[in-house]
Image (cartoon, rainbow, N blue to C red; front, side):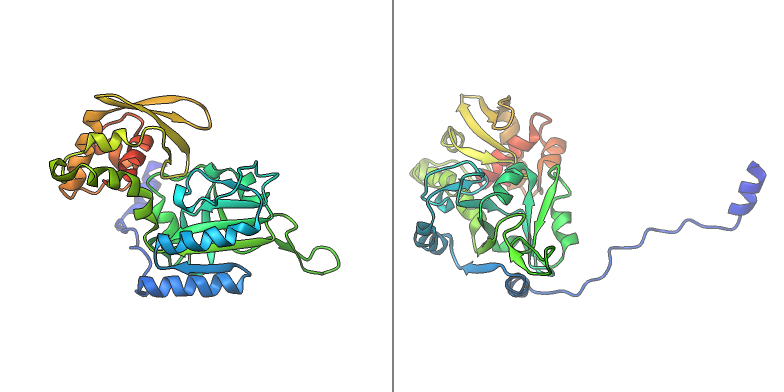
Length: 302
């Protein structure tokens, strides 16, 4: 039998795997324009803002039409609607933070870590998108999440609608009847702003850029954050050499060591890419890498 296998393989050579498929280069601005056009064609109420401040000003007036909201912990505090909190099944408005937006289909990519109830039960769903996270196609969006993907993803391409009964189109049958997507330039910078402001307040004695300002880490105490895949957690306390975080879904606590965070910050400052928890684990420390990386992300260090 082995002789037959050898004869069959004789004269054959290994073939290299094909390179990534070629795609035409498109400017990022064009991706945003295509996304907005395709989203609106699918029934999305699309908005675009040049700054987080402009988005916040719009939100304050727009959200006045609602009485309550269920807001994802991934949404930065300045862009959380000033409304009483309510569970998703009772809230008039659900607010999410997208992982990415796909120009080809006008879709937003949402993490299951936010909870599907928040994304499906409120009659109106507002989704914030960072302009830098608008990509051309789904493959590109999934590639960005390859380092630490969530357990499940949802691709929302417009309001819920169905024509199952009598071929009459009805919106809001299986989910929100209105999907509002707001693309904001500089949203990631807004998410890191509290820590950056803490650094600025320290004046001329602030540490050098490649050092991790531990006072900025202390300033995160009590703040709700989220991992790259959207799992919510809180920085519970910060001591001289550790930071303790607590996961919202399980209540489990993890300890992040200062020396590990400082090592990763030095590597990033020296130009070493640390795009996600997997890279953090390989380069810095194998202790709760998802939460450690998210802390550094909140500080604007990765």
